[in-house]
Image 1 (tube, rainbow, N blue to C red):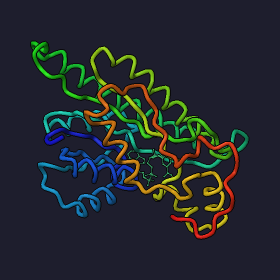
Image 2: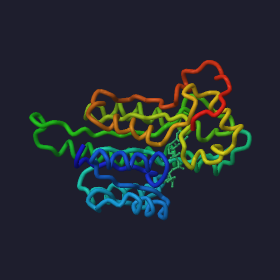
Image 3: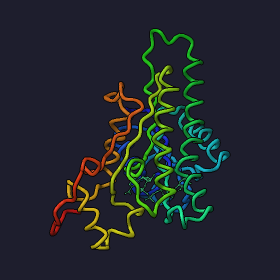
Image 4: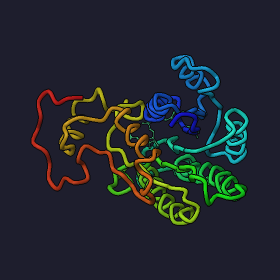
Length: 271
Ligand SMILES: NC(=O)c1ccc[n+]([C@@H]2O[C@H](COP(=O)([O-])OP(=O)(O)OC[C@H]3O[C@@H](n4cnc5c(N)ncnc54)[C@H](O)[C@@H]3O)[C@@H](O)[C@H]2O)c1
């Protein structure tokens, strides 16, 4: 994958950061985009890569101008975009009876509208690049693709996470719809639906024995995932081994969606 360029949103932490690490290991040049300037700079310092391999841009995916700037700055730094990972995401508590309109809008703006805005901007660039190529008949097509980080909550709901469930359900349809639209250009669009992953998003429950017990009771593999276990699936989807995969949602959930009963209690379950 040497020389290919990936944009990874929400790349300063958690799953996004693991994707940045994995894609750098695989030889990609990476634009790490995050709205948290401090965490972004810290990530860059930790990774300690030359500017020719890694750049950070402060970007709010919910803001169209910020997204426009992300594409422009990536092209200015690396001259091409091969892969986009829409990973930036947030949660807000509340069901239909009590979630505030502001929280509903905030979650949808980042998780769904944000993914749409970045996908649209990147896809327009990809299509323009393909259309500009004079004669593609003898050339190998670039392996352009978009990966959305969805969730099992696109399929199964948590009652007091209404906005999040809705946003991820929408993201799955964004994935399928764009996959069909871009297939004639050989641009692939897929999603990953993680179960429970050890990141800041899960920080409120990892030290809570009861909450973790509930997670284990519905997770056949009996542990939560490491962020690198999501990044490895993203690396597969982005690469040539997935050249015939598009419009697909891959659930990386330790068997959770396959389960039709509750797992027996586990003592000393792995983390
Ligand atoms: N952790 C889990 O268990 C889990 C499970 C399923 C799906 N996911 C999804 O994976 C993705 C990453 O989650 P995580 O657990 O690593 O979260 P996290 O909170 O650890 O990291 C999210 C990153 O996104 C950034 N971000 C948030 N809003 C942004 C915006 N508007 N623009 C740019 N960056 C923004 C944050 O600053 C942060 O660096 C999310 O889309 C989340 O919904 C996580």
